[in-house]
Image 1 (tube, protein in one colour):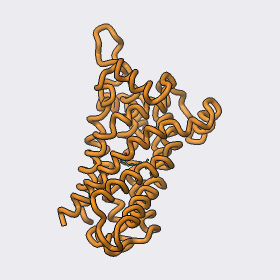
Image 2 (spheres, protein in one colour):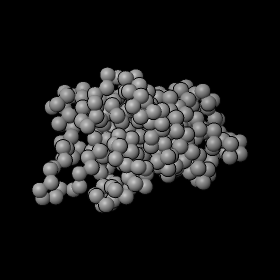
Image 3 (cartoon, helix red, strand yellow):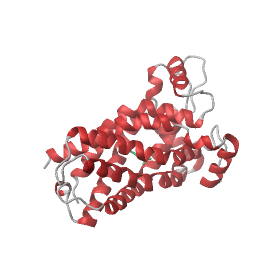
Image 4 (tube, protein in one colour):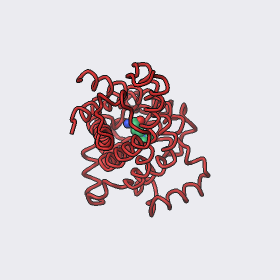
Length: 288
Ligand SMILES: C[N+](C)(C)CCCC[C@H](N)C(=O)O
């Protein structure tokens, strides 16, 4: 099993993540809180209340963890493709796999990574939703002091399975949309590159960016549901399941609720995924 693909996935994920985290915080807040009028309002309030640091809440943890998850995604994707087509990464542009194979490998990668991502994503969302300013004397302390404290508190309150709250919604979100992610990337690269040649850096950046936007556009409705289920039991009610969360959110807030965070998700997705794919392709080709 080629290990470089996992390592390249890890490094490229970490770089993409730092770039995208401020967008991600605004997104999570817009999706789960009703105090903001829009992206700008949320940014201004976060800045005024919590300074620039507010945008980077909960980032140290994803850096270590979500980067590992990206490594699982790219590693499983690439190895599934290898099993389906028997062409290694080096030969993949010369002997392109079919889009069906790319889609199946992407869905497999998405499915496996969703379970690795679930506990980390839950902790990230809970920390991002703590809007209290940094410790000020006299103000009540936030519920969670940091990622480890958050994980321990969740285990204590809900048992270890509590860490997988929202995992099913996450799997539903990620399995098909990561298939779409890799198909879009492959398709755009092949469209703008002469037959059987490796795509150039600019092509990889643009194709990666649009692959991110396309997959997030489809993923956003389930992303909203996922975030809400993860917040269940805190400021939010506990939902009985994905369907219950969908129906009651739509009933209370209208169908528009499923598109909350779409603009910001797309704005974040372009740079994050452009950098992720460029780093990934670059590392793999420089390792031969
Ligand atoms: C499939 N879905 C769109 C949900 C996620 C795609 C993940 C890609 C990248 N790690 C990122 O954070 O943008």
